[in-house]
Amino acid sequence: MSKILFVVTGADTWTLADGTEHPTGFWAEEAVAPYEAFRAAGHEVVVATPGGVEPTVDRASLAPEVNGGQENADRIAKALDSFAELRRPVRLEDVRLDDYAAVFYPGGHGPMEDLAVNADSGRLLARALESGRPLGVVCHGPAALLAAVGADGENVFAGYEVAAFTNAEEVQGGLADRAKWLLQDRLTEAGVTVRAGEPWAPHVVTDRNLVTGQNPASSAPLAEELLKRLG
Image (cartoon, rainbow, N blue to C red):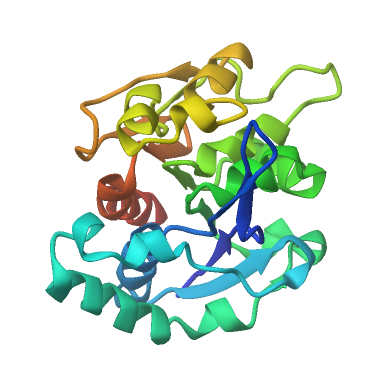
């Protein structure tokens, strides 16, 4: 059994371009699918958040229309209830990377609010990348990569290929024209190459020890790829 670190947003709102706060948090499927896969494989999961706050699920991610119907929405909600580690997170600031065999970041718009500018998270990501241990990031989770800046001022993920929530998906989701910035654009500006797949379809990109997924549907296949790397 290995320990896998889940770094989860502590934000429950996302500040839009006009200053209004849009309710958010982490996206349910992106936490549940990997959690279930890792636990089924016998691994332990530890959740870390900025300040050790209990993370908030984005209520929109529990709706039937984003979960393929009411039955699966109910299953996801029930799975969240049994994800006890979410209710006792450790402080991200206190995390020792050496204690973990892999690191995983779920999405939701929350990371665009806090992890995108969180220096502790940025340092953790840089160390995880350098260490060679499996690092998985999905959907809006790659916003956290923006805070991983090296001593030379360059993003440590510059030159890497990733999957991340695309401009097309943000447009189709209805929030692109209200956002302060779009994830695909900001990653590209940081020197990261975003490999976009079809909107809403599973799409996973691997580059060295970094495994990234484009959207909620990508979270389960991403988890399987991480498990392969854990042996």
